[in-house]
Length: 292
Image 1 (cartoon, rainbow, N blue to C red):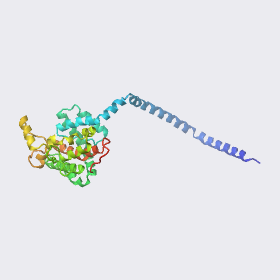
Image 2 (image 1 turned 60 degrees about the vertical axis):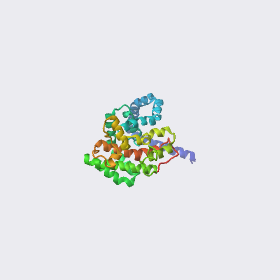
Image 3 (image 1 turned 180 degrees about the vertical axis):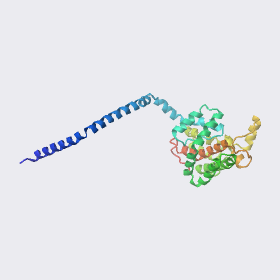
Image 4 (image 1 turned 30 degrees about the vertical axis):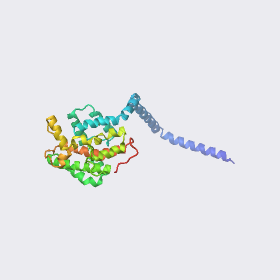
């Protein structure tokens, strides 16, 4: 009588023979698969090798320095944008922001208009979607203004611009928790909303760079008072013709209905509704949350 060990040995031997028989029947297919797998792995190695070589050649220290310098470079881009009445936004993807900063670096005034016009036209629907997510109660007003803008005629721009500006006004008050945030502080030139943000960020230079346009909003064309506009026109001998919130919302002018002005007003809306809250939530400032 066979003991248990012999029985197990015989069973395993029989199983091995059966498996071998099965594999022999499929040997051509298995060999073909193995060859294809080997070729595939070889091709991957060939395809990936150039990229690995390029990665190895990257100056990662320089990349890190560029990233660390982004708030400073962003401030420079904001200054250039501000000179043409545009507002800059960090709420897009990192690569888009990086590309936008680079493209504005050495751009002249006409190029700035073209660069930012293309940017906001290309990403307008995305910005609108983000704005409506953050401010759902303002969705109808924003939709109405966008629809007017997309008529692509002066008639549409005359309707879109005041709404963009008015919504930006209200959003700044909402974000900062400051009533009439676009009004000036008592006995001072800066805006109430700007003063609130300045009090929160203190001497944080990174945040000052990111929020440069807000902190200096009172000096920009869009918020200049009639007195300052008249003084500058007298000094330069040129008529003030930039987009100005007071002139539009107070009915001082009636020739503001252009595509560029509408896009600039939209950039202001995106700046107040997306960039400012984004900056206040940035890792550069961890002790404060915006009101929204």
